Image (cartoon, rainbow, N blue to C red; front, top):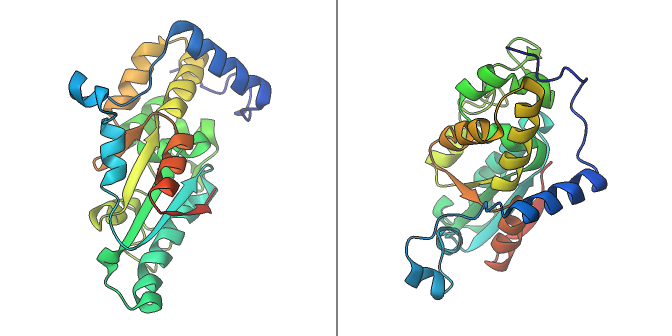
Length: 226
């Protein structure tokens, strides 16, 4: 497999890159929107995304905007919210509406281990596996705790506890394209691979930006967790 970083380390997506991406997607009519079940639902403004938003429950709601890997700290912060929220508000954990939006450089956290090893995601996104201190060949925090002393400080545990997690389809589109280009692969093939390998319990949002906005509109307090 060709090294996905053959032109050097991952470059940040700057304003010019972003504007070029947006223009290109508009020009070719790329749609990263969630599939709508029926035309009637679309006519009434209901989509899988709006239904996802409507399922955010709880009285005390928060959305963690996970823009960067940050050594899995967003997962730790979500754990802290779930641990301290019931004490702070005198409620059950079920009354904490907790949302995590995986976007931009944190998008590989939404993908299964197979994608990490197949596309060298740890090397590309500069995410090291804490167990080896080398570029991760697996999703390092899905089933492995961010803090070894806190067994349930994992993304998998959070999802099982009811945390609603969304993956940014715009980020999947962009970064799968970058890796496809670096490895001499077809963009559509890599993107399809990533879409199919999204972890169980993680939903798709047309973009992380709209997911954060939608969650805030549904009463979530915004926390930048990148």
